Image (cartoon, rainbow, N blue to C red; front, top):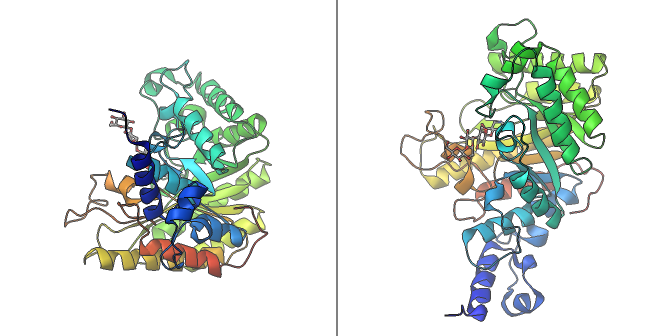
Length: 397
Ligand code: G3I
């Protein structure tokens, strides 16, 4: 029996309104159903994170799972359409969580499969969003054939061909690439602090310079970024790692390596010590090197928090407020992305590790929208942090 299009459209309209995505509705539906909502409740259009960030010349965005995006026209019904609306409404910049990693692009040594990544790019283009590429060189998310195929004789060729092909495929469409991801780990004992990755073992320490130069040749329009985690706190180990990252950046600049930004992933624990003077100093040192600093993957880990959902949400919101107040006070921090936008699709709720699983078995609540795609206290904390940030040059929404 033919579906009742009126009913379907109305269902979708109600779902979109519930989401606060009224700006996405066709005029006739908005006229009938739109009710004025105060900013304390509404979160779409002028009340969205995208809008509030842009009003201060900032970009807010999120990691996105392209499989959840319906880019073939926004069909009615289904939570994926609401997820797509949420991403479109809230993010001015997006990054594919996994689709542009080696594992997501390279089913075989001689094959590049851009299907998912192109779907993601089409969705971002439809939404007028900027795109971060993530990532061109990492020791994780390597395809199953990597270990048996790549060796010291051919590693340089594999790395440069991958970067040339992928960055070339999206030439002119990428705001910034995470060219090398997580290459520093002082625990590995090297004087230069480099992590002992397959790339280091197969090519040597100059694999990083090679990656950045190759990316610059393949896409001179993209801002080239070094991205890392565990450099936010003033603890001894994070201070040591942060210093090693600074030395890496200074080395890049001294050798004329094309780099424009450093990504601070910002995976923060809800309880325990919070970032402070060390991070502020790091951001300023990067600024002296004419580097921008991007908050690339923020979320707030609540695995060890006691108390119920409300207590967790309040703690998470406080971390977002304090962290973003600290970093956005610095003029060379123009971008904030969260690693996901809803608790329903957070990597933290897919991990079975003790540092991710809550003892009470409840799901983590790390992101601006809860698992029912409703704005959490973190949403309002993010928005308030954008509102109180010193204004940068204005951006379009
Ligand atoms: O797609 C396959 C699926 O076909 C298969 O059935 C399933 C079970 O094996 O695996 C699926 O792939 C998984 C992929 O996520 C998509 O869900 C991979 O195994 C899994 O390793 C991968 O995890 C991602 C992880 O990076 C490693 O790439 C997480 O989603 C992603 O959130 C996480 O993101 C990283 C950043 O890239 C770098 N910074 C840290 C951050 C968190 O670890």
